[in-house]
Length: 283
Image 1 (cartoon, rainbow, N blue to C red):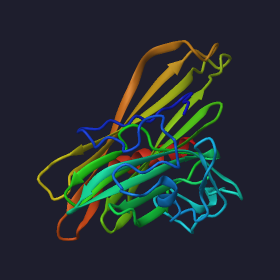
Image 2 (cartoon, helix red, strand yellow):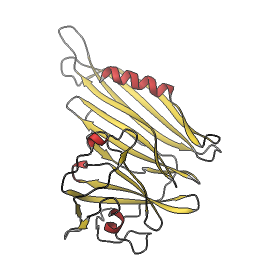
Image 3 (cartoon, helix red, strand yellow):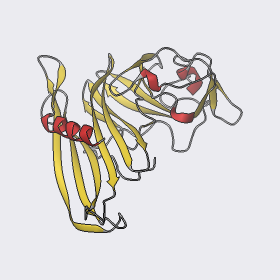
Image 4 (cartoon, rainbow, N blue to C red):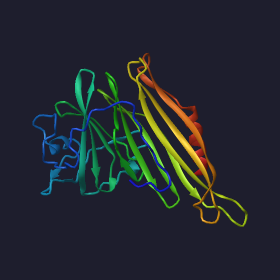
């Protein structure tokens, strides 16, 4: 998950339930912690009907159910062929309402689909979606955040790099007992532009970092805050490396607050919309 010119940083405010799967444990033939009598292949067969564990503990499949794409996810980015190779899996326990649920994510060869799945405590599939809408998809660190009795926040990272730019999308997804829905997506852009020494025009390095906080505010579901800090650093036109002057920072903040009457989150993201317009003009 290398970044050359830009980065997305996810910072959380409270502790979360640790993953049900131990780090480095990729045995798909093993049982799923917390779900009695269910192996990983049992669980995942509800999404990949012919999944089978391989001799080395990984898994393969050739079939996948139709998945709806949410948020920044786009079905045009689903590229799974006749052989879907499973490299790792993660299940995280979350309490929603009066029942335990599991958020399940996968690491697949070539990131061929961005699966996000919700299972109940018996191992029954409640919902499964695609959130891949870029070259890479990942669920890193503390990507699951409890919001309150009936909801949790899942954070997906969509990204790609090229020689002079990076694109990092933070995708916010709401998990409730009924299923998974998108709250919003925010792009953090990175770019390096070299200057022109003949015209005495300096180069420029742009780095944007996103931070997500969950803040209990007395509502039934906690407030979700997302801020992006953009740094612009002038660079020497000769080597495109040496810094000129001070880096200039600009902050863009937004939040999502639970509306009890509408039983939905409402977005307050005017500053993030301004950032999106600026980034669109600099892509």
